[in-house]
Amino acid sequence: MKCRVCFAPIHPFMTFGKMPIANAFLEPADIRVEYFYELAPAVCEKCGMFQLMEQPDPKRMFHDNYAFYTGTSKGMDKHFSDWAHSLPVKGKSVVEIGCNDGTFLKHLERNGAITIGVEPSANVAKVAKQNGHIINRFFNGIVVEELRAQIVDADYILAANVVCHIPNINDFAGNVARLLADDGKFIFEEPYLNDMLRKTAFDQIYDEHVFMFNASTVQYAFGQHGLKLIDCEPQPTHGGSMRYTLAHKGHPSLRAAATIESEIESSRGGPYAAFYARCENKRDKLHQVFNQIQPWKTVAGYGATSKSTTVLNYCGLGIQHVNYICDTTPGKQGKLSPGAHIPIRPHSDFVKSYPDYAILFAWNHAKEIMAKEKFPGKWITYVPEVGVS
Ligand code: DWN
Ligand code: ZN
Image (cartoon, rainbow, N blue to C red; front, side):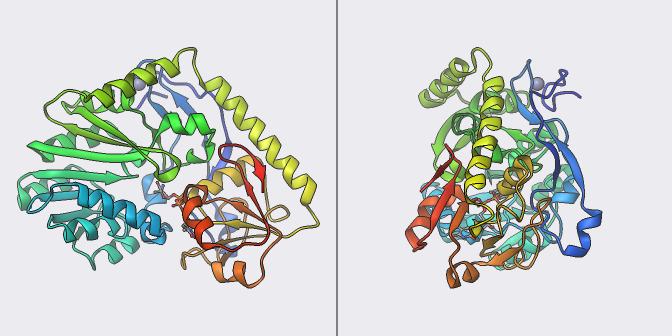
C-alpha cells in the first residue's frame, strides 16, 4: 500500500479489526449482507500523513441516505453562524464543499455571500436546497469546470469536516487550486490529529476519516499543488479541530509557524506505539466499568455517532452492555447500530424512562448536552479518560 499523498510505502501501526461502515445504520433484514472492511491506520514515514490503509468505496458511505445532519446540534449551528460572520464574504462568490444540510451556507447567505454548495448525499442535499444553489455530486474535476463556467473562480472555498473524508487528496488539491481566485482563500476545518492523540480519542478513526490532519501534513499535501498554508486556528468543535487557511501566495502566520514547530516537537520519538497502548488500555477500562454494572443495570448510549461505531466494535460491546442508543435524528431511529446491532431509539424514550447509566457517545457535544439534560443517573465517559460520574 502506498501513501495517498507522496506514494511512499506505508504500513499499519495498529488494527481495530473488521469494522462496518460507521454510518450504516441498518434494518434487521440487512444484517446478513452487512459490509465489513479492515480498519487499520498508518503514518507515512516520508510525509507524516496519518491515513487509513483501506477505505471503503465512497459511494458506500455517501449516498441517498446519509445518516448525519449537521443541523442536529445547536452548538454546531452557532459555530457556523460565528464563522460565517467572521468572514468578509459580502458580494463574494463562495463555494462550500460537502455542505451537508446547508447549515453553514444558510449563515453565509445571510451574511451576503453568493453561495454554491457541493454535496454528494442526496437526502442532506435536498434539505440544503431550501437554502440555496446546490450541486448534488462529488466534488471533482468535472464539477470544477461547471463551477468555473458559472462563477469563473471562487473568492472563498470553504469546507468543514469534509477534506479528511476525500481519499484522492492530490486530485482534490489540484481542483481546489484551479477553482480558487488568485487572491482567494481556501479555508477548511477538521478534527486535529494532535488533539486526537492527546485525548486518545481513537473513535475519530473510522471509514469516513481517511486522513487525520495536522498543520504540517496539510502544508505538505497542499504545497505540492501550489497552495500555501498561511494560517491555522484551533477550534473546540468535534473534540478539538483545526481551521486551516490556504492561498496561492503567502507565508505561514506566526501561529501557523508555531503550530508546525510544536507538531515537530511532539512527533519526536514516534507517538504511535504509545497511542496504540493507550487505546488497548481504554478498551480494558471500559470493560472493567461494564463488568461492575452488567447484567444488573440499564445502560443507554447517548448519540448514535459515527464515532460510537468504532468504540462499540473495537471494544466488543453489544446489547448486553448498552441496551439501546438514543438519538434525535429521525433517520437513525428504529434501526440498529452498525456491527453491534444495538437498537436506536428516539431521545424521548431516554427521558420517558431514564436508564441507570448513559454512555456519552456524543462527547464532543458534552457542553450542549449537559446544559439541557436533567439525567438523574450516571454518565460513563471515555474521553479523555474512562470515568463514571
Ligand atoms: O466528520 C463528521 C462529523 C462532522 O459528523 C462525519 N464523518 C460524520 C459525523 O460524525 P459523528 O456522527 O461522530 O458526529 P456527531 O456530531 O458527534 O454526532 C452527534 C449525534 O448525536 C447525531 O446523530 C445527533 C445526536 N445528538 C443527539 O441525539 N442529541 C446530538 C446532540 C447534540 C444531542 O443533543
Ligand atoms: Zn506520504
